[in-house]
Image 1 (tube, one colour):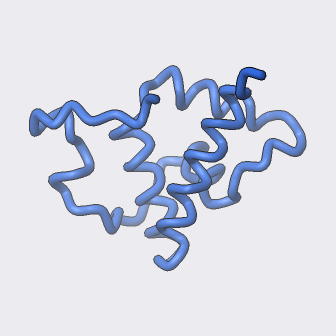
Image 2: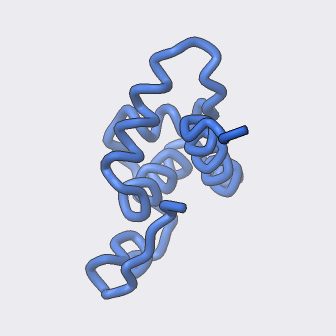
Amino acid sequence: MTADPNQKLVRMANQIATFFRSYPEDEAVAGIHKHIVAFWTPKMRDQLVAYCTQEDHGLDPLALTALTIIPKAKSPIRAATTDPHEIGMGASDAG
């Protein structure tokens, strides 16, 4: 049986949200947002946003907020890791 790619994206986003849960909410949302923008392709982000319009999508509320707004808070992620493509790391969460 083939795994649902939407559920894989939800699981990945929820793992990121779990990591940031110990931060204040505004920083957590900013950290999740920055991680997803830095490490996910636009196609992955768009697919998850579209999937989350359905009921019972299962996405953590922090991750959902991070996908749907531009955070005003500063991310707790170090600057060197927010834009890996700019420093030649070429990192991606795409699996």
